[in-house]
Length: 170
Image 1 (cartoon, helix red, strand yellow):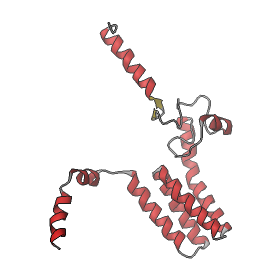
Image 2: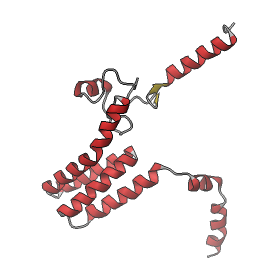
Image 3: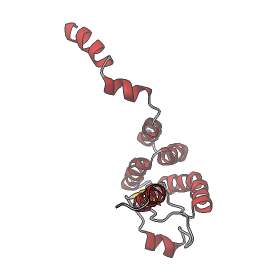
Image 4: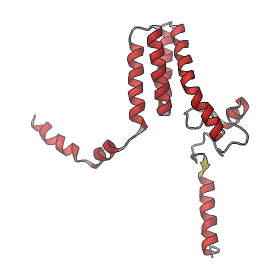
């Protein structure tokens, strides 16, 4: 009890805990939906629970790309348990909830998989039609892109503005 009464106020005053407690982050929402999907997957596997599990898996995936991992694990769990109809129902519900966002990304950004956490190379995405050839995303899926704009292009633009403002670099 003495340790707890000393460490709790000390922990409450640490800047890291204060910083993360006031920040709204999508991780918390993804974690909540993941816990709910695991809850329905761990109950008796029925069609109703598979639908609820699919709803919460898709919401976890839409709130943060890391939701793809527990969703895939739950799908593998259903297949191992030989519940193929429930597994296919989970995939159908997952797709039905996720497809409107994919369509929105394709219409607005020209890239259906932008920010969705799917590791699909640009060449394959073009082949499958997930990216339009005239998309606004320059390096879709690359680590070096920020909101679809290449960091190299940002730095090049900054350098051009500096040269326009101050003349040459000499």
